[in-house]
Amino acid sequence: MHKILFTLILGFTVGCGRGDSNSVDAPKPGDGGGGGGDGAATATTVKAIRMTQPTTGAMVSLSNVVVVTHVSSTKSGSIYVQDAGGGMYSGIKVFCNYGSTPPKCAMTRAQIDALAVGTVVNLTGAFNSFLLSTAPTGAQPVFEIENPTITATGAMMTPVAVDVAASVIAKAQLASPAADPYKGTYVHVTGAASYTVSSVMAPEFMSTCTGMGSPGASGTTYNGFEATGGGQTLAIGLNFYHTLTYCLPCSAAMPYPCANPVTNQAFSSVRGIPEPDYNGTAVFMRLSPVVDADLTHP
Image (cartoon, rainbow, N blue to C red; front, top):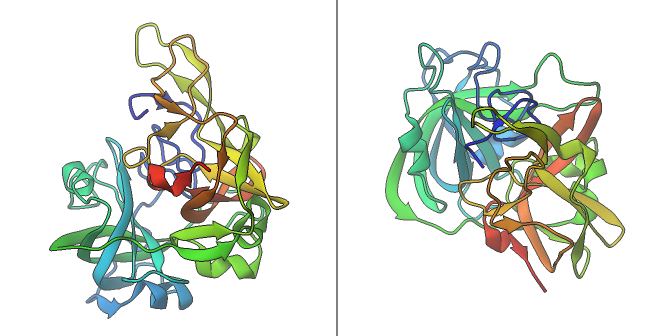
C-alpha cells in the first residue's frame, strides 16, 4: 500500500503530502508547530496533556508510555502512545518529520519502524495542536508531540483499549464534548452485537491513486469504510498499514496489492483510535484499527 502515490491525500492516508490534520507523509507548513520548543521538557502524563493543553511548542516529557501503533513513509512517521493501563485521555499522536531539508526530527524512519506495538518508551518532544489553515469549518485539531526523541526501555506491555459506546465516537460525533476524552485513545466500541460494513466507497475516504509504473495508471481508492450497528455509523480508517493488513483495493488499471480486502463483512468486536478528520467540506470522527485483531469476525 505504501508503494502507491496518492495525488489527493485524505485523513491519515498513505501518500505524498501531509494534506490535512492527520496525514503522515510530507512536512506541513511550519512543521514542528512551536518549532522545537525552547526550554526544558516538563515531565507529565498523556492524560495531563490531553486534559490541560500545553502552549504550542512547549517541551513535554513522557515516561514509560506504551506504543499502540506506528506508521511511516519516506518523509515522516507517526506513532501513538498511551499511559500504562489506558483509559480516558490516555493516548496521543507522536509525529516525526525526518524527510524535510534539513530534517526537523533527529530520529530516522528505521527507528520509528522499530517501535513495535507494546514497546514501552520514554520520549521528549514539542507539543502542538495541529490544524491546517485550509481546513473546513468545523474541523478540529489533532494534539501531537512533534520532533520527538524516543528511547525504548526494554520493557513490553500490551496496549489496553477502554470501552466506549458507538454513540460517543460515531462518525457524526466529532463536535460532541462527550467524545473528547477518547480522541487519540485506544478504544473498544460497545453498543451493538456486531457492526456490518455498510459502505466500502464512503465519500469521506475517497482519494485518487496513481501507480508508480511507467506510464502510471490512475484510479479511485478509499482509505476506509463505514460500518453500522445499533443505529450508529462508524467511519473506520485503514491507515496503520504497518500493523494492519485490512485494505481496500484501488480501481486503477494497475491496482496496488490488497491481500486482505474489506468486503460486506460483519465484525463482532471493533477497536481502534478515534481522531478528528475531514475531506473537502465534510468533517467527521475517524476510528482507525491498529492490528487485524481489532476487527473481529463473529
